[in-house]
Every structure is written in structure tokens, then in C-alpha cells.
Image (cartoon, rainbow, N blue to C red; front, top):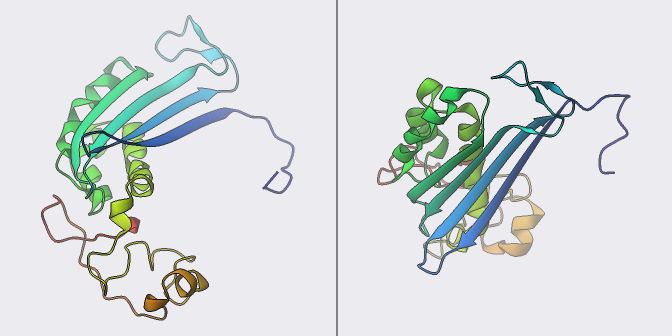
Amino acid sequence: MPLSPPAPRTLKHVRRVNYQGFERDDGLWDIEGELHDSKAYDAPAFRDRASVRRAGEPIHHLWLRVTVDRQLVVQAIDVAMDTHPLQGCQEAQPALQQMVGCSMARGWRQAIQKHLGGVASCTHLRELLFNLATAAFQSVPAVFASTTPDEPPRHLGQCTGWDFNGNGVKEYFPQFYGRVPAPRPTAMTPATETSDKSPSSA
């Protein structure tokens, strides 16, 4: 077990999140996310207190498919809400279409807050969308490529392992070892505006 032994405890809630990235035959990429929430015990159903939701049955079961190009600009979004606690939850789906044209590589979280924040959409869809960008970065090889020989890949300087003064950069990107990166522009949306291109903005 990777964690230290826990104190005595009882399981109450389970959230499962899964992401997958697919390269399409037409040159685009589908990044899919699934969120499944359940309780570890039987409880009254939220919408119908007379019925019981059994342990393991979903409270939320949500799906997203975001189609992007090689620059991670959103081309299309598909959403499904198989299970949700309130009748009005499905009204959160249309707002996601406002994310078409936004970039996962530039101000992604700001764009989500702008178009889907507050009551405009669903908290759980926003959470799923936030981290879907990380899966996109891991799926689309082109986003890590430098546009010029003098430009470091986008992931350098964005975590401890890829510190410009660390062993990772020294071993795999020695030409950039010890380099002080230039300040990046402030992240903005839509994708056509000057903005942050680093994975940390996703």
C-alpha cells in the first residue's frame, strides 16, 4: 500500500474519475472524461425520499467528450448526464457549447469560470472539464514540442521534476539547464488572444 496505514475508519463516499485520449482518423483528438459519485451505504434517494439508493449506485454519473486540434483548441463538446440528483441538473448542459473555440493551452480555467461559473452550469461538469486539459496534454504529443530550437518545451519549469535547475532538465534537455525562463504573458481567452501557453494554466 503506497500510503501509511490509516486510523480506524468507515468508507462513506466514493468518487471515480476517468480520462481517456483518442487520436482520430481525421487528425483531431477526442479527450473523454467520466465522473461517478456514490455512497458506500444505502440512503434515501434525493429526488424521491420514499425510495432507496443502494450502496454503490451513482448519485452523479457524468460524461464529457471534448474534441480538440493539435493546438488544443476546442472544436466540439458532447456531454451526457446519465445520473443526477435534481431534475434541473440537465439544464447545465447547453452552456458547455460556449467552450468551443477556447484553448486548453491558454487560460483554460479562466474560460471555464467565465462561461460556466456560478449557476451557468454544473459544479461537477466544471471539475471534470478543469482536469480534462491535463489529459489532453498527455494525449497530444504536439503540444510539448518547441516551436523554435531556442524555445524550451512547455512543460519545463512547471513542476519540481522539470525545474530548469533540476536533474530532469539536466539529463533530458541539457541545452536549457540552468536557464532563467522569460516571463509568460497573462492568460486570456479566446484562444486567438495572447496568453499563457504553459501546462500549469490548464
